[in-house]
Image (cartoon, rainbow, N blue to C red):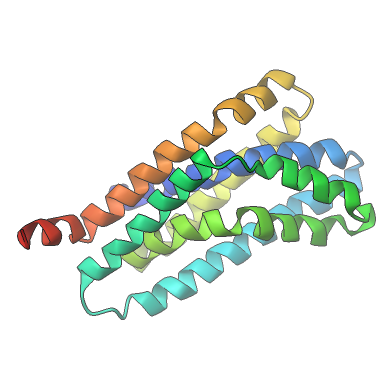
Length: 203
């Protein structure tokens, strides 16, 4: 159980490291109490939708008869991490552009859309392989960890919105942190499902 929960914590940290920068931009844009309440609820709902989608897909994939085939899903976060690290695209620039064009009165819907649109592919790339191999007996504890980590990230983003050094650090090193976590989680999935062992046995 401890290994399952630790992996859940690591995988969610991997996705929220990038989401933290998005939240910094959102809190900088929305400063009234009402706007920030809508922002926070939007962040929770947006992330919840991604997790639910990953769980549903994982339940379908659990029907695959050979466990080592499921382990191939570990290649997805590895490829995603490498692609993001070497890509010249910046999610924070994309978010800033969308914020500049939107109607500020629809904060709740906007945050859900930005969460799914800018972070959806990355989150699902990590969540689906993880949930596919996870024991669903521990699902309540896993979800509790996700909520806890997200709550801490939201709180820190709110507090550090105007603290320039934090923003600079995440902008400069966030991709590297993400790359390491994506590679570790992808490798863990490949190993835990027996994919690496099976492929070596064929040699």
